[in-house]
Length: 252
Image 1 (cartoon, rainbow, N blue to C red):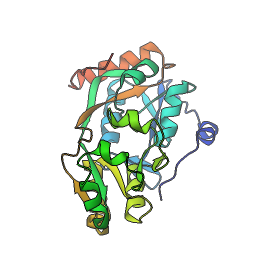
Image 2 (spheres, helix red, strand yellow):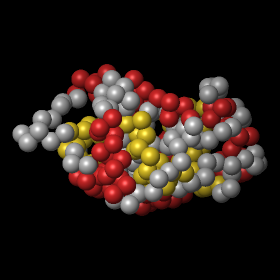
Image 3 (cartoon, rainbow, N blue to C red):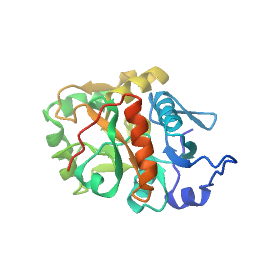
């Protein structure tokens, strides 16, 4: 069962960890983002978790893992009311102004794809592209509340049309909304779709649309709150550099 933690509850549940050897500690938020992050027996596991652990170890920092939600994490970064880092976020001009990004590319997220049920597939195809589709009030789309889908799609979604649902739940849940007929389509990263099919073969009935004007593959960076001390940010950046991560180009 995937839980979404309200921001207020998350703050109250935040329990500082103190280590006897006075090793610096860093809170890192996580949520299900398969295949990179899974939650098993209440603990985060997966490739992204292993990568963050190696970075923290190189930086000589202990991790305090904090269960979060996609939008709760964004709110914490926006408010800077807790010293946190993340397991990877897309960088945009606005986010770079509000969040502290480490300068190295953490990973490349595959391109976004459109998913629908077979009975709705032809209706979507007639539009020819995602921008035309989201303007159709007869077709309900569901997107992440704080997700970035690229312009001009983000510009249109910001108008909050009644037939577009924005959800704070993970991509897995968006796919479930389409599967159960509560939405006609959604947009998710291709690797999320592959993982859903592996875990729930029955979802393979859903159909995809290639070359539909959705966001291409993009780099993600470790984002931290602006309240984090410069020496901690430097230690993490130096660790990524020492581990061979490539410097990325942050938007300005």
